[in-house]
Image (cartoon, rainbow, N blue to C red):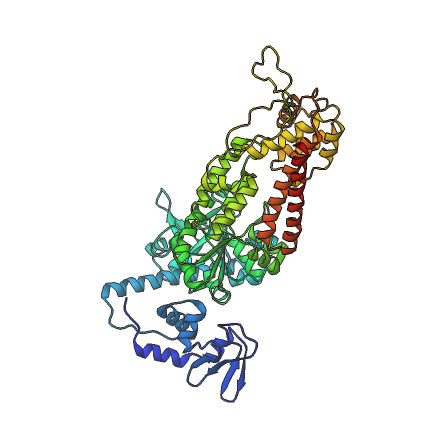
Length: 607
């Protein structure tokens, strides 16, 4: 690409008002022939940033950044030299001259400039039509109903394409643009019968601009359900490539550079709502998968050690896309975080309900991509069956394998899975099914003629049902065994059921069973709900495995309860560690020692 002549660059520098330019970033006060203010490049309380308007230079005595107007724009907006020069030339209306240029390259450049001019003209036409026409009233009402102000809509040049078939087409032809240029810009298309017509009609339009604010295409929202696709975008062409661009990047780039972070959402109105709420570093991927080109654009904008926050839909395909982008971000040494949104809400809803402060709080609690993905596996897991837990464990293992070995990150994920599925950490890291002792359990009923092999040893506890295989079964089996022991131990069992807390259970089903048995202890089979098959099966199984004819010792019931109590404390202790809640850790450590002492005491009495 041809370079700009040095004479052009010097004329541009002469035209720039550096005080006016810098004042867009920080307040300046005049001191003699110079201007001073707080540095826009680092946090400070005492002004150390100086601007010399005559020499067109700036310098910070704190962080030692300095340069001319072009350097200032490059540093504050993460632009390369040519982009900064072109942006300043547009702003100060300076014509740039190029050095000797290849004729074909010159022709392509001039064609591109004409198409950009055509698209800019179209954006202006749509924006004017939104505010001035009677036809667009419904669109104005819709946007207002979404809580979007006129100021933010005008800032993003949101518009409305009229319903007429050729309104834009006719005006563009009158201004000298050809039909071929209208097609190339994505503003016109041809019917099967050969008729040329406007591509966007009766739709709200969102200009899709590059980082310099040059319109490359449009996204357009239908106003009626019978219009077909809810959103219609400019087709891929000479200028517009969906996977390369980010909606709102031109508006967001200054804030991204200043805050050293970007918030990535999916839709146009999400970006508008966030900007309106003061989160001006928001951009949108426009419903596509987050691509490497988009990541590269943001990497330049956030700079070294910057952060990128994803506030996207988290379906299975979305999770896979996030994991792919996370790997790319790690290669670039970028920090990628996932923002958890309230159930059923989008970023626009969040901005309206919680404002900048609330959004900032959620950004502060954002998770790593792997932590988010593991969390989704645990949230979706069927914890009421050993098979469901084992499936979740296998999925979680494949995610954890992507974390560096012997790292704090991997240890953290292992802890989450161990707590979430109530399995030992060894099961998570190695997949080995360690031999586990069979817990004291209620017996099956005495063996009958069709139930061979259920004999009892003299003086031993009643025989237990075979423990299910797989690491996901251990905690479930312990919880079900405890419930059976309570049924088999009369008033003592009722007392222990009353002591149960939600944290004693790793399964919602066994928790419901515990609550049910506490309420229907005297006749647990009498009032089983007919519409809860899982609960009926579990309670019936617990009842059948509880030998009501054999007394269960108090020490056995107490030991079984203490085992549940120990696991509860361990889970809460690890969570307190993740939260950095030191007082809670100390409290739980004391509880852990107390339970351990009680278990030792009970086991000593039993022997």
